[in-house]
Length: 60
Image (cartoon, rainbow, N blue to C red; front, side, top):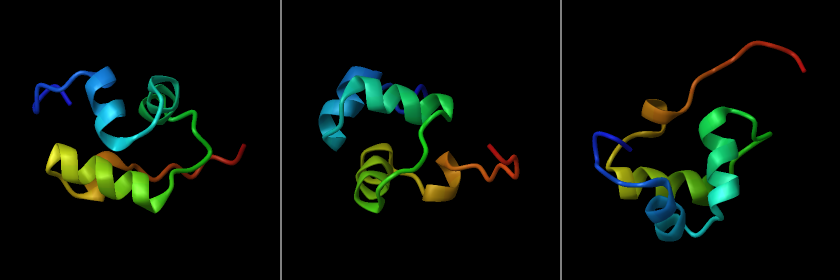
C-alpha cells in the first residue's frame, strides 16, 4: 500500500470491505479471505496474490 501510495480507507472503499475488515487482513487476524476480495485487492494494488499472502504453519 505504501508503494502504491494508497491509504487503508481508500483501499477498503475500492475493494468493497470495511476498514475494520481490512485491518484484520493486514494484521493477519482474519480467518480467511474471499477470492473476490483477494482479486479486487490485487487489481487495485497491481500485484499478485503471492505478493500479499504469506503461509503460516502455526495451528490455532
